[in-house]
Each structure stands twice: as structure tokens, then as C-alpha cells.
View 1 (cartoon, rainbow, N blue to C red):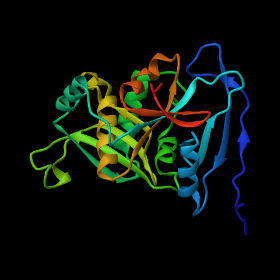
View 2 (cartoon, one colour):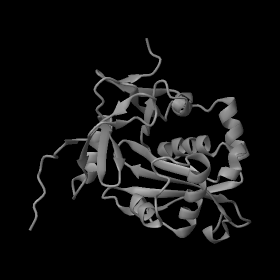
View 3 (cartoon, helix red, strand yellow):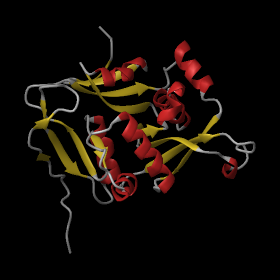
View 4 (spheres, rainbow, N blue to C red):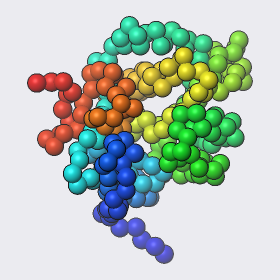
Length: 249
């Protein structure tokens, strides 16, 4: 019988090219999330700037760069801007449902369209249907899939009325908030701003759960593709002295 150690063991990856900042190299420190203690360990590590991928928790450990900063939204204080209210109105015909973390062929087809349009040639572009299934279901914490579909005539009463799938979020439910692990959407629906819409929806879901934080992963200072995360204020960033309100003097 294999006995899991009570104290997590941490490992360091070899340097590899940074996907966000040209000319930089990244390293990560990681540990395994295994067994009954996995949810508590994820809570603790997330508060310390870690992210989850399947049964791995990791955080940047780059030697010469500190551009990656953990971000969490203060949901009780959040108020949508005028542009965010327009995004909510634009997607008023959608219904989101939080489900068990079960993968489906419909999800994978949407995932492939998203990758081929938005991230062709990226690190996830070669993921097979089996790889996708493992990303969704290989978790020993409370992981959910939130599916966003066009609202049907009876969606208020039964999900059987829901129409086609337009967006999916994979999220963890933790002791102090929700953590958005990965999300993707129909690339042909770019006018909807579905990435922003899913964050706005998660803010409200977090508030309804009575939890204080929505964790968004890393904001990378100097990477334009990560700038959208700064729009959701107020938020805290993890600094050497702990979590600090962004923009506070």
C-alpha cells in the first residue's frame, strides 16, 4: 500500500520559453493535490498564489522576472461599469448552469473551435478528446463546469429547453471563493464579449454563495492579452507582504 506523505512535496521545473513575454524564460514550482486533504491544500496554496491544473498546483518561480501577479476580485464591493452592464444586457438571452465536472463531446467541439481560432499553435492546440476529458474530470477538489446556452422558451422551468452551447467555464469552489481555472467560448460570437461575461457571471455566483473572492489567476504586467483582468475592480494582488488592494497608495 502506498502512503501519501502528510507534508506536500514541491518540485521545480526546468526553464522554458515564456508564453507571455518575449525573450523571457519561465520556471514553476509545483506539488500534487492528492487525497482527502486536497481541497484544504488547494485553499491554502491558492491564497499563496498557486493555480490548479488537474491534480497539480503550481506557481511561477522565475529567476529574473516577477511579472506574474495573482489576482482576486473583491466581489462584495464590485459594481459593473457602464460597458460591463452593456455586456450583461447583450448576453441576456443566455442561461448559465453549474454542473458536475463531466466532459462531453459538445464541449470538446466548442473547445476545438475556440483553440483553432484564438490559440492556434499554442500549448493546448494539440489536445485530444482524452486530454480534454482529463482536464475537466481529473480533480480531487470541488470542480464544476458552468455551461452557457441560448435560453429556450421554457429555460426558466427546465434545462431541457436550453439551446446551443456558446461558452464553458471550468471552476473550483473553495472555502473563500471561486477560482476560474479555464474558460472558452464560441469564436463566431465575438461581439458578445463572452470572456468578460463569464467573469461577470462568476462574480455574481461567488456573491450568491456568500464567498468574498473570485480568483482570476495571473495578471502578467507587460502582456496585453492579460490586461482585461485589471478592468474588474476592486481587486487585490498578491505581493511580497501579502494580498494588497490594487491601486492603493
